[in-house]
Length: 391
Image (cartoon, rainbow, N blue to C red):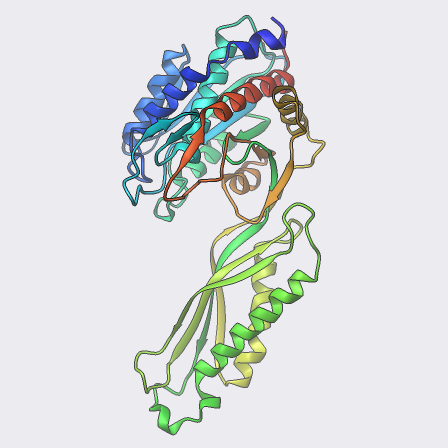
């Protein structure tokens, strides 16, 4: 079978029906049981065996495989089954080429595109040399899950339960997302040993809140320094942002503690501990001036990842995109982090993203294009053929 015959078998209407079925099943993080069962059934209806890996009771990672003849590398197409909450009760419906509903773009449209690619490969005479793994994990979106599904899959890769040479996460734009900066949530805490005191008896220049303001000003100057420093060609300058300011317990009383919480994002080539130490050193002179103690802590840290543009999987997806769309695939990077940061550093498997869409992810009104799901399915099938090889 030639390439044209294969991609002509990919059915956009069928993919849309699978996507709609998935979107109609709510699957907020930690409550993914029903969609786990549905997606397992969809995979089995294609004729695939599915390994069910329980993460917590009823919450399942799903691993299916299209077996090759053993003469090529193994590619994984990876998805997450959960969504953020449907805060405004957005209904599920279609309007022309667009399908609306929570989870359409993030990322059940990608899941359905994978089903469409697998269906085409299974129902034709294509024989891959390497295996094609189809995996879906729980616990991606909400922090309460602590990334338990992705981390369980990393454990399964490291233990040899499943194995692969490259991973494509099937979300994001229909572009080659090949790098993400590292990220942490930091908290800077200033502590005074004076105890709370009526503000009338403390010059404002000695009030711990004054030095909290100095810390905010220093962060602003630091961002200016980052903007003028090393600029990553795909993701731009590093960032520091503040989202929470805490100080005081009464309107005319000096606080014992003041704190800032925000995010810090850094480029490949540095690690979280180095970035944390840098932030500590920025705050120490301010603490010294205010006779305060300062500590800087971090959580939810993710190291950066970057997959080179000449990596075989980047080239395979780029060639497939060119074939399907007659356009050159854009190479992109982002400051935001995702599961690729975990997979690369947790398992050592090079990873990229390529999805049908991302523009409305987490938006009040979420949607996905049926034609872009169909296009993505074609790209996945052709990329698997090039990367895994065919008989």
